[in-house]
Image (cartoon, rainbow, N blue to C red; front, side):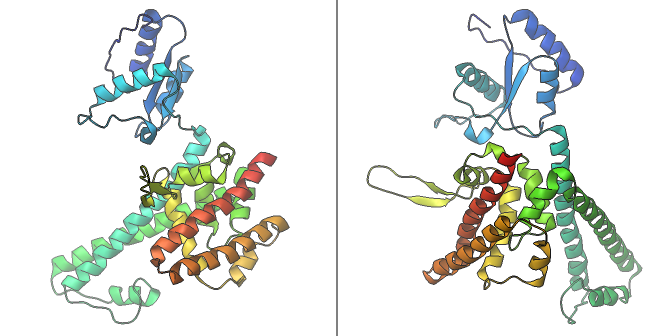
Length: 346
């Protein structure tokens, strides 16, 4: 309210209820109405609905919202009141850069495949654990190869219910494998679309990054122009070390793990490849075919530097997993340099 009075409403997150609330706000408020909420399970649909109704709405980063050290009670009502007070001050909260509906849909496709892949891994574990409980152990090599699958199908349980359970477990595995394969085909087609083709092609020039990783990185970040520096992207992905220093005491912490954990996981997985001797194999050479020379040169520079970086840290006594995270941080800088240049050229 213009007088500083706080008014409270509690409504359902439904289009009809939101329209009624907006009408009420326009009646009691003078001038332009502004609103905000923290990023979370509501996504950006609420923001778009409010903006369509003429209400400016911002989605704020929860990790950047100031928290009082002595506050030990957290409720939705208290959070809403705090956000309203911060929004009135105008310079405290940090807004999340919203994707377009198309970009958000593409990102959901990547996350759907990742979720189903995790479900597939769990389903396979259920099969192997069930067989282990029934005394069936496989000694012919790795699990879930063609040979391992033939071995499972030849198993005949003595008890009828055991056989029914095994058949159900195997049916779940087959269904998830088909779904994952179908989504993988969709993502490959998505990577060939004009809006993604150039960025995906550039990312595939780097060691350890193939089509799936590349399209996921592009869809998750969706706008590289918003990161004005490599350090900004590193902070966003949470791969920079935390620090708690005071006076003459300097205490370095682990990485912050803030921001997008999907991209951070992919970068760490890709960084494991740089522990091997620098070389351009058959697969990497094929992925680089037709790509700009400057992008390939940048990827080669990254390959040499990150390999040296990994072994320098390991020989200095650092654990291999910590060395890989450090490599992932520097790999983020190399990727930013390529993709930011492309975003600026558009």
